[in-house]
Image: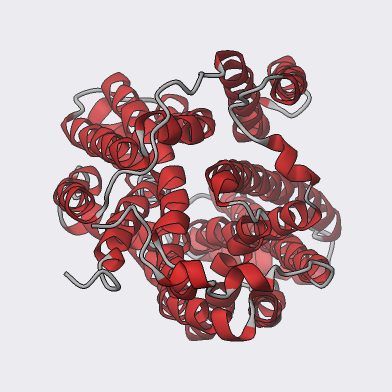
Length: 520
């Protein structure tokens, strides 16, 4: 095999594994009602199927750097891929909500390690001159998978078997393991590398507490004892984790990387873009399903143009970035996101679906240009290849935390603004107004014509008016939330303007002309 071409099958294996892991963060949502019916679970019980996946991934991601160094990147990636595939099989065989949650823990443990180890492996496997296209293709797995998830899940639930959302991973998982085994060599192994157990415990406590708080905050109440206790636990554990990592000789996570200005700024930019992106991905289904009454499949089709556009543009932007630089690509991409983003924030009940398709497609072009390229900024700012795995751990943790907190914040804003708009609308819409009175009389006559008594017809008319007030209040709240998501992207653009790109690291060096040692 030509050594100059041999890294692509390995990259494909990494992308395939990561795509499955990210896909399973969003693909489950549509199947929740079906699982509630099959398992006889309550809404609160079934939500743990989603929540436990996020919490487990967050807990294990900090382990990825140590595992890769101690056991070798190839063995670690294969083990995590096997764990994820096994968890997918067990999810497909689950007979109760409890067994599904246990299987999701196994699946997420493999997925969290696989995503992080895979990202650092690409940095070590691919020559510098090919890094742009490789990271562009890797970006498909990270950013397109969440958008494709609802569409794929909707198809499985409506036309096939909901268990396929898990078991579909099995053939792809096996294929990815075979490709890794064949095309990737083992990296450097340090069997005597000590394990920072205290650092792991403090990081797990901090991340799990924080993500559980933001996930359950709206449900339990942000000022409830449960949520406040979780935030305090996260704060104390986080402080202890930082103190531990700064004083131990072998830290679990190299948090000294935050001292690098462009690493920290690049991380913030990427996190803001993630929040702006996932905010729209989670808010528009509320509009489609709750306000327009569309099916899950219809909602998936609504979001599909953005996923397709992003999937096409992401690898192309990776190739162009090597020539024009990362910063110009990110700035132009964010600009492409902002215009349709502000237009989408004016969506209402009369918005044409084809208009939304075009706006989301243009937004997908922008996301394809800026999402993956923004992830490279912090990684390239590190400089030392030996610190890349640590940087990969931090970027994955940051992405997970930013996405969870951003979604929780926007959903909370939506709920709060819905209540505020409903109160304001109720004050404006009174039965003494001639227009309202005339409308109520027409509806009352309509219900009376259907055979209801005068009292029943009047009550039904008032109920319909209340539903309309609530729906229009929800639309106004949705517009507010989508506007905030767009403003977050504006903040990312402004911050990006002061980031200094490490152009030397992006270009091929003489040493990079030879194939890295991890390839067959």
